[in-house]
Image (cartoon, rainbow, N blue to C red; front, side, top):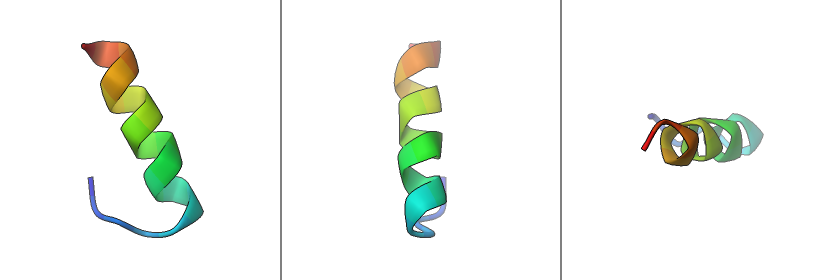
Length: 19
């Protein structure tokens, strides 16, 4: 996911959730 401020946290959370 591209680092884009607040939405980066959402992307990172989603990635962890998919693991």
